[in-house]
Amino acid sequence: MMGAMPAYLIVNYSVQNSDAFAEYQKGAGPALGIGSGTKVLVLDPDTEQLEGEGAGHQTVVLEFESKEKAKEIYESGEYQAVLSTRLNATTAHLAVLVDGFTMPS
Image (cartoon, rainbow, N blue to C red; front, side, top):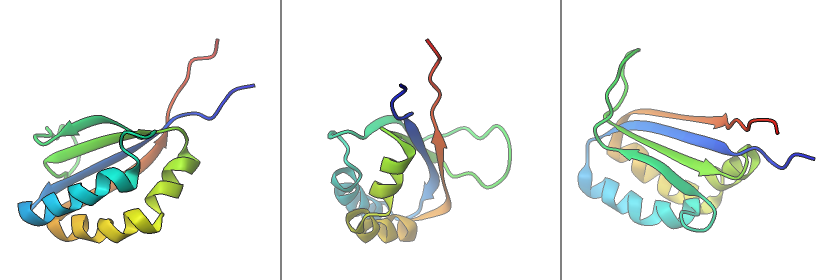
Protein backbone atom coordinates (compact mmCIF):
# COMPACT_ATOMS: atom_id res chain seq x y z
CA MET A 1 0.00 0.00 0.00
CA MET A 2 1.34 3.42 -0.99
CA GLY A 3 1.55 6.18 1.58
CA ALA A 4 0.43 9.73 1.01
CA MET A 5 2.08 11.49 -1.89
CA PRO A 6 4.02 14.64 -1.00
CA ALA A 7 2.54 17.96 -2.08
CA TYR A 8 4.18 21.26 -2.94
CA LEU A 9 2.94 24.77 -2.34
CA ILE A 10 4.48 27.14 -4.88
CA VAL A 11 4.14 30.82 -4.04
CA ASN A 12 5.34 33.72 -6.16
CA TYR A 13 5.10 37.45 -5.46
CA SER A 14 6.93 40.78 -5.46
CA VAL A 15 7.75 42.31 -2.08
CA GLN A 16 6.71 45.97 -1.92
CA ASN A 17 6.96 46.58 1.83
CA SER A 18 10.05 44.94 3.34
CA ASP A 19 9.18 45.80 6.95
CA ALA A 20 5.69 44.30 6.73
CA PHE A 21 7.06 41.28 4.87
CA ALA A 22 9.60 40.72 7.67
CA GLU A 23 6.69 40.66 10.13
CA TYR A 24 4.94 38.06 7.96
CA GLN A 25 8.07 35.89 7.92
CA LYS A 26 8.28 35.88 11.73
CA GLY A 27 4.82 34.35 12.03
CA ALA A 28 4.70 32.30 8.84
CA GLY A 29 7.48 29.84 9.67
CA PRO A 30 5.86 28.51 12.85
CA ALA A 31 2.34 28.70 11.36
CA LEU A 32 3.37 26.67 8.32
CA GLY A 33 5.20 24.07 10.39
CA ILE A 34 8.67 24.87 9.05
CA GLY A 35 11.06 22.57 10.88
CA SER A 36 8.33 20.25 12.12
CA GLY A 37 7.23 18.50 8.95
CA THR A 38 7.08 21.25 6.34
CA LYS A 39 10.26 21.69 4.32
CA VAL A 40 11.42 24.80 2.48
CA LEU A 41 12.80 23.52 -0.84
CA VAL A 42 13.18 26.86 -2.64
CA LEU A 43 13.42 30.45 -1.47
CA ASP A 44 14.56 32.50 -4.45
CA PRO A 45 14.36 36.30 -4.09
CA ASP A 46 15.55 36.78 -7.68
CA THR A 47 13.19 34.59 -9.73
CA GLU A 48 13.72 34.63 -13.48
CA GLN A 49 10.47 34.55 -15.46
CA LEU A 50 10.77 32.56 -18.69
CA GLU A 51 7.09 32.48 -19.77
CA GLY A 52 3.80 34.20 -19.07
CA GLU A 53 3.04 37.59 -17.63
CA GLY A 54 3.02 39.23 -14.25
CA ALA A 55 5.19 36.94 -12.15
CA GLY A 56 6.72 38.36 -9.01
CA HIS A 57 10.43 38.42 -8.25
CA GLN A 58 10.37 35.99 -5.31
CA THR A 59 9.41 32.30 -5.33
CA VAL A 60 9.01 29.89 -2.44
CA VAL A 61 8.39 26.15 -2.73
CA LEU A 62 7.28 24.27 0.39
CA GLU A 63 6.97 20.49 0.70
CA PHE A 64 4.18 18.96 2.78
CA GLU A 65 3.50 15.31 3.55
CA SER A 66 0.28 15.44 1.50
CA LYS A 67 -2.11 17.82 -0.24
CA GLU A 68 -4.57 17.35 2.61
CA LYS A 69 -1.94 18.34 5.19
CA ALA A 70 -0.93 21.37 3.12
CA LYS A 71 -4.55 22.56 2.91
CA GLU A 72 -5.06 21.94 6.63
CA ILE A 73 -2.05 24.10 7.49
CA TYR A 74 -2.78 26.80 4.87
CA GLU A 75 -6.39 27.11 6.02
CA SER A 76 -5.52 27.01 9.74
CA GLY A 77 -6.36 30.00 11.92
CA GLU A 78 -2.69 30.40 12.79
CA TYR A 79 -1.59 30.81 9.16
CA GLN A 80 -4.62 32.81 8.09
CA ALA A 81 -3.79 35.28 10.87
CA VAL A 82 -0.45 36.12 9.17
CA LEU A 83 -1.43 35.62 5.51
CA SER A 84 -3.04 39.05 5.18
CA THR A 85 0.29 40.62 6.19
CA ARG A 86 2.01 38.93 3.22
CA LEU A 87 -0.80 39.85 0.85
CA ASN A 88 -0.62 43.50 1.97
CA ALA A 89 3.20 43.57 1.71
CA THR A 90 3.37 42.07 -1.78
CA THR A 91 1.95 42.33 -5.29
CA ALA A 92 1.70 39.85 -8.18
CA HIS A 93 0.52 37.08 -5.82
CA LEU A 94 0.33 33.51 -7.04
CA ALA A 95 -0.03 30.36 -4.94
CA VAL A 96 -0.58 26.88 -6.35
CA LEU A 97 -0.76 23.53 -4.60
CA VAL A 98 0.41 20.51 -6.58
CA ASP A 99 0.82 16.81 -5.92
CA GLY A 100 4.29 15.39 -5.99
CA PHE A 101 5.35 12.40 -8.01
CA THR A 102 6.76 9.15 -6.73
CA MET A 103 8.23 6.54 -9.01
CA PRO A 104 6.57 3.14 -8.74
CA SER A 105 8.88 0.50 -7.32
